[in-house]
View 1 (cartoon, one colour):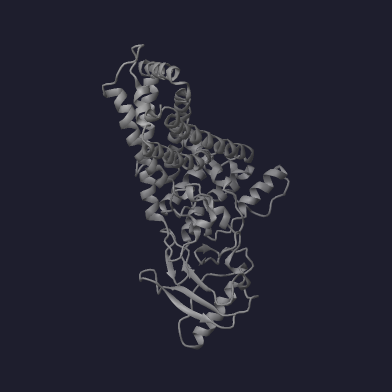
View 2 (tube, rainbow over the protein chains, first blue to last red):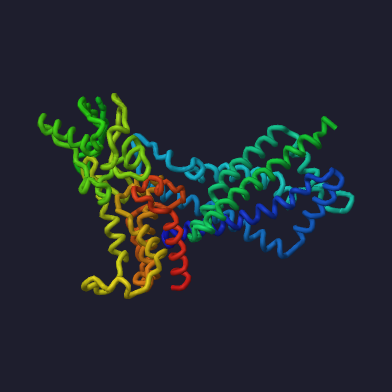
Amino acid sequence: MEHTLSTLMRKTLMALTGLFLCFFLVIHLLGNLQLLLPAVQAKESFNGYSQLLSGNIFIKIISYVLYTSLIVHCLDALVITLKNRKTAGKYAVDKRGASSKWYSRNMGILGTLILIFLVFHFKDFWYQYKFGTLPVDEYGHKDLYTIVIAAYQDWWYVLFYVLSMFALGYHLLHGFFSAARSLGVYHPKYVSWIRVFGRGYSYVITAGFAIIPIYVYLTQHVSWN
Amino acid sequence: MKINLKIWRQTDAGSPGHLVDYQLDNVIPHMSFLEMMDTLNEQLILSGDRPVEFDHDCREGICGQCGMMINGRAHGPIPHLTTCQLHMREFKDGDTIYVEPFRGKAFPVKRDLRVDRSAFDRIIMAGGFISVNTGQAPEANGIPVSHEHAESAFDSAACIGCGACVATCKNSSAALFTSAKIAHLAKLPQGKIESRKRVLSMVEQMDIEAFGHCTNTEACEVECPQNISVLNIARMNWEYTLSKVLK
């Protein structure tokens, strides 16, 4: 990857993998919104949905594209960052930040925060569901719902989730529009549409994912019920 | 007014540089930044010191020769301005001003504030031209070009190659410079013919010169004296992907 791709091709790769991850986030959020249903209904619906996804061959293929996108996005980012570090100019006094947004300059740091979050996220839910021993609900489905509710009992865990979603939000705020730029959307009309859409998309994704743990914490807290 | 200066001094590309303190007591607010530098150099020559070397030419804001990092910003604190068009009235009496050369791996410092920007020339040499014998000036309306296309191409062609885009980019990317030339020629019928080949060879040269990746922070557009649009970068990306796919 380091010696064969041009700077523009590496950025195209970032854009394609990033946009696929953006698409995945929409599907992931739509599925998770079931957690906002009343408890009994949410449990049946969410566990049934999880079962449906894990048994579908089409979803399995998508999931491998997802893992690949995630890994390629991270590795490509690492190569780009290391190369940029070598080419970048350094100044004794540096006020260049005045001419760009802070989150556009710190995509690597925001991405790393998201990656740290993903390690915990995968360990607590994905790994549990795939390889752990889960209780079974009354319909015979693996009871992922109870695992999720149990996880959101601690305020610090909820806080960790919400803060991670803000890191994701800022990452998307730059990432979505930047991907369109890297792929070459140059017509001013579509560029401004993408800016508006990207902003709306980032707000909805951030708010959607952040609300779920807060909602669960407030409504399903064991010691309060 | 009284101005304190901290200026980067460096004997040649091989030796290390450092900031040196200077003081000017009689700076007039109407002076341009370069006239202030001239005043300093006069003072240095009279006292037998080596004057501070810096690039400059037209001093009208159109040649792209002058360029310094002033208080950590390319061409100083005002957006869309060359160093020669920056005036001392933008500073206050008693201010300390840091002056450094434009930096980047592809922009080695030759001496003091003078930077080798020949990497830009080599990018143009790689394809920033039209391969036809120009001869005498052709009939202006021989090839129909719409007003919108002509204006848009001219906006891209307005790049003066000062290098502020590279200097202000956190990655020292030359995407704005390279893309302005690619877009300028791709927008016109004469340039379109070679656009596929051009974008591939110019981008290849840009990478050879060790400019960084464009991460779309858009800082370059803010500092660009000619206000060259970042949409040129989008155009370059589009032309590049298309050329790669259709090659």
